[in-house]
Amino acid sequence: IMSGFIFDLDGVIVDTAKYHYQAWKQLADKIGIEFSLEQNEQLKGVSRADSLNKILEWGQKTISNETFTALMKEKNEQYLDFIATMDDNEILPDVSKVLNYLKTKKQKIALGSASKNAVQILEKVKLTHYFDAIVDGNQVTNAKPNPEVFLNAAKQINVQPEHCIVFEDSLAGIQAANIANMVSIGIGDASILAEADYVFKDFSEMSLEFIDKLINL
Ligand code: B16
Ligand code: MG
Image 1: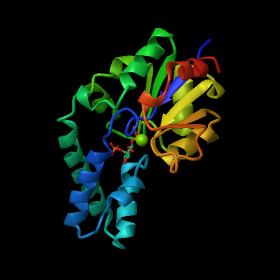
Image 2: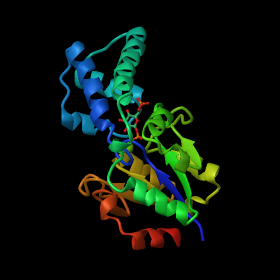
Image 3: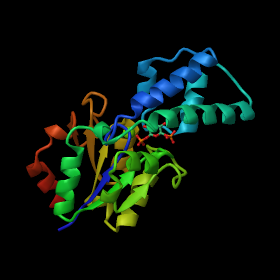
């Protein structure tokens, strides 16, 4: 029996949200827009361009296309400076344990992330070898809650969507998994992720018996 396990990256495998926040915050300060942690919450799972659009909207600012491109580049360079300092200590609790368990059970594992920096981040935290397929922001045109990223991942690991399980920390990602007809598992705050089939604070709350249940879907 085999299932496909699709992991979101930011907020599920590593906490890069804090680096996104710092990079956007610096940029927002520079262009004179206020930007709070609560607003950052709304950028989870959202693409780089859509994130900048939201920040500009919040600040009621309009800018030229050239400036928009330049600001995106500036934010990403700042973000990459943070990423450069990452190592495997930044893997979230029990992620490695779950990946190992799935490997010993010969399950298919895929990444389904909106980030264009996903490959680089997996390399930094030394988890690349677990993944049978990596689908990231470079291969997807429709952002979550559109299910494209997860359907694409399912196809690459050759598992029917009904036999795929998605781990996600963003509401948009949970909605994408539900639309794709996959089992949606929220990682994080149950009040934010209420639409998920199951919610866990993190992987340390998930038993191996529960994972066995998912394998035998
Ligand atoms: P980048 P995920 C998402 O990653 C982040 O949650 C979101 O905050 C970010 O804007 C997006 O990636 C794009 O990231 O600028 O690196 O391309 O949660 O889908 O793994
Ligand atoms: Mg995420």
